[in-house]
Image 1 (cartoon, rainbow, N blue to C red):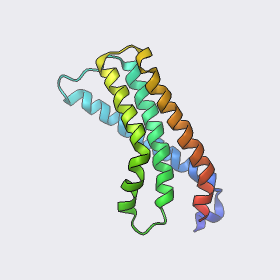
Image 2 (cartoon, rainbow, N blue to C red):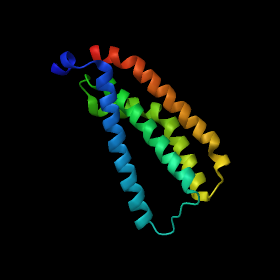
Image 3 (cartoon, rainbow, N blue to C red):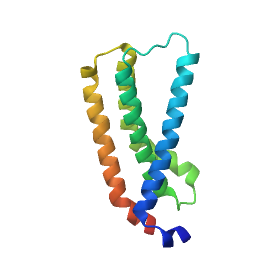
Image 4 (tube, rainbow, N blue to C red):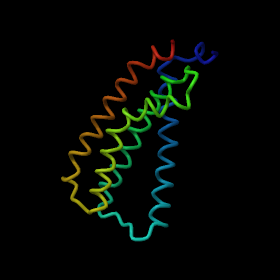
Amino acid sequence: MTLHLIARPLTIYFGKLLFNLILLGALNIFTVILYLLFVTGFTVGNYLIFSVTILLGTLGLASASTIIAAIIAKANTKGTLYPVLSFPILLPLLLTVINATKLSVEGAVFGDAVGEFQVLISYLVVITAISYLLFESIWKE
């Protein structure tokens, strides 16, 4: 309740988004390093596609999970509500990231992944814009 009095809603949103970005970025880097070290036979054919996919996927996941968490923050059944709400919102992001990662492992040229990157950037822009517009009303309710 004190946070409502001392901070503006958009400041809270961007703070939560920054925290999620740092956390997911660290987890992704840690996971990629472990995966490359311990999974035998796994090689990345195009590191540029792989890096851009990790970056855009992390940004999209952080943005979407921040607003979803804000929506369910006041619900009584947080544990069961988060997967139900997040699945349809995150599905396009996850499918696109999987396709782009597949292209990077297969060693495709960067031009083959441009369509996937356009989808990821569009997703990121839409989710971030909607989150920016809706967070204040979600926070006050």
